[in-house]
Every structure is written in structure tokens, then in C-alpha cells.
Amino acid sequence: MSQISTTLRHLRTGFDRLAIILRAELWAAAAAEGLNPAQAQVLALLVTRPDGMRSKNIAAQLAVSGASITETVNALVRKKLLIRTADPSDARASIICATPEGHAVNAAIEESSSRFSEALASLPASVQSELLATQIRLIRELQQAGAIPLQRMCVSCRHFRPNIHPGSAHPHHCTFIGADIAGTDLRLDCGEHEAANQTAQDVNWAAFTQNPESNISGTQKLPDTVVHGS
Image (cartoon, rainbow, N blue to C red; front, side, top):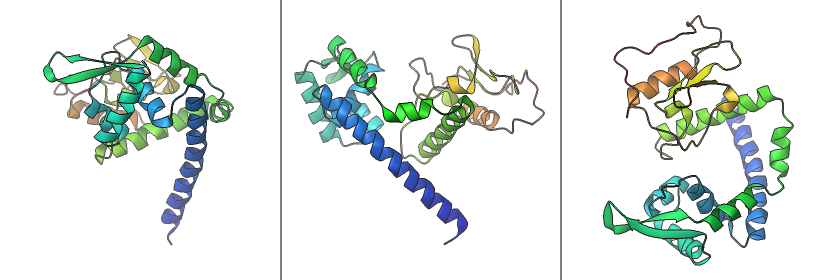
């Protein structure tokens, strides 16, 4: 087996070990609130979507079947943690939203004791930033491969300006909040996310992954032909 294949095998094994811990913690935290892990995941997703989502979109985001999502949503509606409302754009469809009770239960799950979170918190800030950047790269690769839908990450947002201040503690800029941001400020799921067009996403990605030692101006500008709108 080649060295590259061996490395990939070790990385996959490591992720599997971490996933076991995360699943066990989710089981315990969800059970304490009377939910199963699938219900906790759907609730966590909808808490971040105040405008609600259709069932098919929930299924796509969580990479599960529509039938499974229907069963899970029905259970959460019975528990009064979710509510269905008419979709104003389609009378045949409904929008599913988290209720105030749902928000409270989700907060309790998020605030439950987590050895995994404690382990992450023990790492130096520089390592946390590197891990976050690695997650962003992996998620984007999966998006490009069509394995998961577009995520609401900074790197695909029309408001994101990467590495315009290279070498500084806050190299990136968000035009939505009008502020420079650090690597540890980058979001994997932002409520203010607005997808940039593909050309802008590609240019931003090239700037985001550039060599930190490259001689790009701190006032880098995108080509005039690039528009950050959708």
C-alpha cells in the first residue's frame, strides 16, 4: 500500500474514532431531553433557520431519506418542539419551524457537558484555527463532489473577502458586519449567508487558500468582471 493510501487510512480511522465520541455524546444529551439523535439533529438544524424549511430540504441537508425526515418531524411536532405552517409559495407544501420550546430544548442539548468540546478547548488557538480551516476545505470538497448541498459557510458567501490583510490577526473581511475577522471567526453555518455566484466563489477560494507568504496586496481587489451577487 502506498504511503498516501496509508495516510488516508489513518485519517479515516481517526475521524471514525471521533465520530464515535460525538455520536455517544449526542445520544446522551438528546436522551436527557426525551429525544433520539435524529430528532436532535433536525431540531438543531431548524433552530438556525428562523424562516423554516421544507421537509425535502431538511432531508437534503442531513443526507437522509424523505420518509425518515417525515417520521422525525411528526414526532417533534407532537412534542410541540416544531410547528408546521402553510408555505406561502406553494399551497401544497408546508414550512417547518422550531417553536420557543424547541429552541429551549436545543439550547439544553448544546449546553450539556461534552468531553469532546473540552478537548477542543484545550488546544491552542492556532491549532483550533487550523482545524476549522481543514473542516472548511473538507466540506467544500464534498460540496464540489455533490455529496452534500451548499453549506452556509463564509467562503461561499457574497459578503466574504478573504486575506485582504495578509499577515494580520484578522486577515479576512465581512461586508455584512463591516468588520475584519480572524480565522477562528469563520462560520460553517451563518444565518446571514448569501451565496455568491460561482465565479466569485472560485476567486474567493483561491484567495482563501493562497500561501500566507505570497506577495498579495493587503488591499486585494477582485477583477472587475467578478460580481459577488448570486
